[in-house]
Image 1 (cartoon, rainbow, N blue to C red):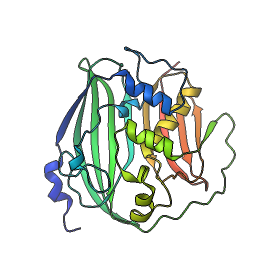
Image 2: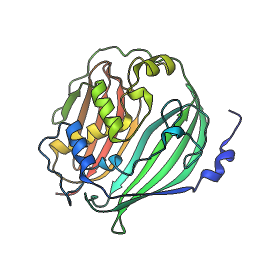
Image 3: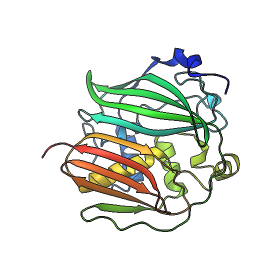
Image 4: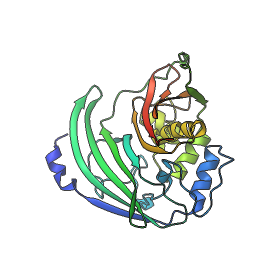
Amino acid sequence: MTETTTDFAAWIGRRESTDDDLGVVPALAAAATLDDTTTRFDKGSALPPLWHWFYFLARAPQAQLDVDGHPQRGGFMPPIPYPRRMFAGARMRFHRPLLIGQPARREAVIRDIRQKSGRSGSLAFVSVLCSYYQDGVLCIEEEQDIVYREPGAAVARPEVIGWPAVEEGACARVVTPDPKLLFRFSALTFNAHRIHYDRPYATKEEGYPGLVVHGPLTAVLLMDLLRRHEPRAVRAFSFKGLAPLFDLAPFRLVCSIRDGQVSLAAHAPDGVTAMSASAELAPN
């Protein structure tokens, strides 16, 4: 790459605002996707943590999508030329829940752009701060880590080895990803990235062994595991993607709670930690 972070200095501080009326349909669709048949969602219901990702969607016209399905760069996001893009992690605080059926606004600002070299080649990190408001009150603060990288070597099919025993007191769930789940999540988030639903593209063009499980889907599943076992409100949550997951074999989610602090992880079929996460619960 001939450009440097200096070339993208104009994008630091760039802002974007998105309004949404927070209709009930996306929440109902998300609940169906997660097999949540018990929670009722009506006007005034609180959105569960992370479900704000199903709203405030980027609506790039079809003509402005790149070959991989991502919106073309150079609008809000900087035109970093590395072809691979990932939502690699985030840190967020929940001040109060967003309520269905009430107008809300997301204000996003690019805070930083950094470059470095790694084992897979050159990388660029874009930090985006998203603030979510309802009735003029800050509800959620979220700092997203978006990573761009050069094409790497083909990714090997993961071995199915198994997982270590779950520690005493922890809860766990095994998830079997399939194209139906990945397609539904792509639809929920209006995400046309082809690695999640186009197997020939994912395997032949980007070198993956199968369809790639969305990082945000894994994070949502971890949060769903926590919500099903812990009634206290979540005050903070962070996650970091460490390795990809594919639709080729089940993966395991684990959640451990001690003194209001939560440790979560998603384990690939070979036992590797694909995502680590943590959460902070409200006091009893």
